[in-house]
Length: 556
Image (cartoon, rainbow, N blue to C red; front, side, top):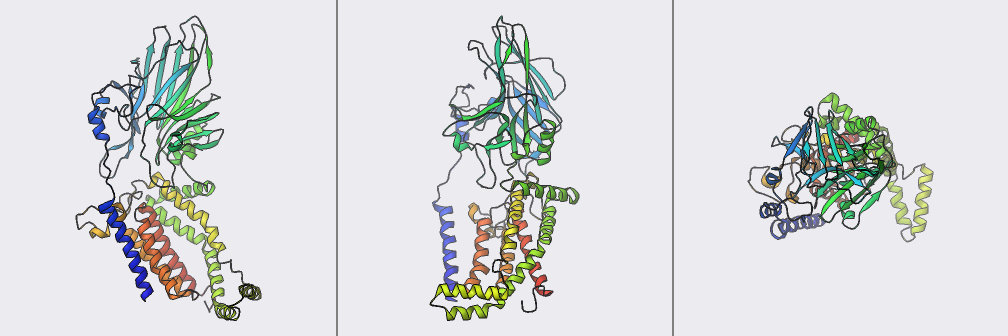
């Protein structure tokens, strides 16, 4: 037992060292954005202002704004610059405690500024164009989901923008230029998305967050880190935007337009920018020209993205959801999960049912794998005899083992193939649970109110009885412990059947591995922990069923 104690003491010592570092040594970083706001709250907003010269949201919101809204969203357009810089999703809340809608865009000039601007480019350099300081005037408008604004420069050229929200999350922008000069102008409209850096993104590698574009049906991810080094240009862009884990702001060219190009960069003001521009067209003297662009501002719900992909002829719009390498498996799995959720009314219960279905689908493979393992176990005495006979000659030992396998008609890899066949589906389901917005703030039984967040309880505070703030690395809740307990049962059940393992190996598999998984996955979304726990329970039941009904033979 001494080796078990040593392993346990070593593991405990590692945990104590890590906890001590987290609580007493690791430097504490305090956000300084508020101090920057307070310090610069009276600095006027200017497009040339350096990124440190922020204003407070209250100060920025003093600028005149016009409201656009429907049942799902509410946006505000800042008349100075014609910026859409305040946009909320009514049906989604920031958290489960406060009834505050998700704020997708934030006011211009603030530390977390995030806004959209539509404008023009003209080849003639002497033409005066509207800027971010241009004050637009409101024209006679219509309903709450429409807004018409206009501006006329000193050269007599008129610019108009008509914003109209559809019934959900698409904003249509019709831009008109009236050429009052005596010469032909070559113009094009463009859309720009600006986001103040640095951007806070998730620390999980399972989901991409950042600038994104689809060009000629090919997806391009443009990480923020790449834009720190150089800008990126692309042609034949169908759409491009900035993607968060659950939300998307995307520019979409008019589906009747062609030759749309785009670029993404980090500009001199320290802001990330995604631009889509249509082709230049001539506007004759005394004539007008109209160009259309669309802006999607909403959740990355697959059914919504698929709807707009059909109605607006957007290429691969569903790729805004990071389905990963196993797209051809992941998306069907998502549809099945959504189907279950529609009829069961609970995303959590849908996860449990889908796991049962997956286990049932692969049950024949599990039986085949168990039979192969049982056959290998029956050969253990003969294998031990061969190892003793050829202990000085490894080559002869391997040849003798292979001859034994052939004589008994056993394939040593037949127990592995069923597991390998399950891996793509397992990872697809794992990916769906991580990226699915349907899991966000979805409740479960008891204290779980958000399947996308970690288990809020902690064993180190006796599940909330002791009032103490702990580092995230020591927040191990009830569900991770349940997952660990089911892993222990599963490993012990499997180890009892595997006579090839010595006691120390069985101890590591039965206790060491589950303890490591509990610690590593404690901060994972609790929905994934519930899935893993339920999967372990089904595995135990499956193993018991196979043994009870002797599906692998009497000697198993």
